[in-house]
Image (cartoon, rainbow, N blue to C red; front, top):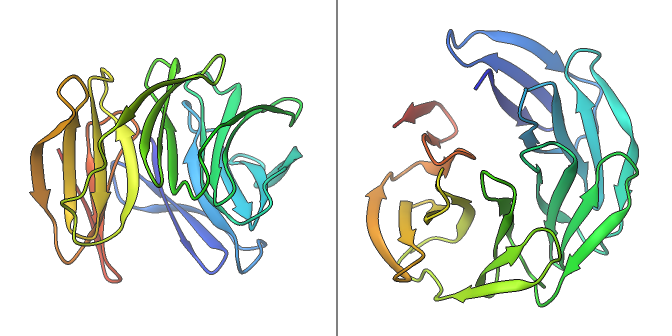
Length: 220
């Protein structure tokens, strides 16, 4: 990991992961801009405004075409595939997989209305979605592979789900903390409370980032 990114009312700041020092600020973005994830080498960052997704080039500080446009409602999350060639978005209407180069929608996953989160496995072969149900998908053809029992032990809304580094588990995070669910047995095997912080697991399932309005910290 190279950077940590923060966003406040469209002012995006980039921080060095090791030193904690601010390295760049992007000020000329819309007040309603939201941030997604970096690509693998940290050269690009996904941002969106309502239902439009853009790629922000870190070096030039410019938004790169094409714009991804196809959701009927506001987007919740956006992330790159591990190879950086596809982009995955979740919104109230559906979860969509896009070709980054052309901006074309490759697949719209079925029965993913009201999805709050979507993410890739580390090898890019599977997709994890969370909404009215938690599902595993084949990233190549969009077929549903598994419907999982919902994680119901959080007192607050779940706002992030991520595969573990070997895709055997997935992590669900909320204002309560983080749960680890083992796919083979479909149950929670670990829970870490992190009140009063909102928590999220990184894309590789290695770090827990917790933050509130005043500070943020990382733990293994």
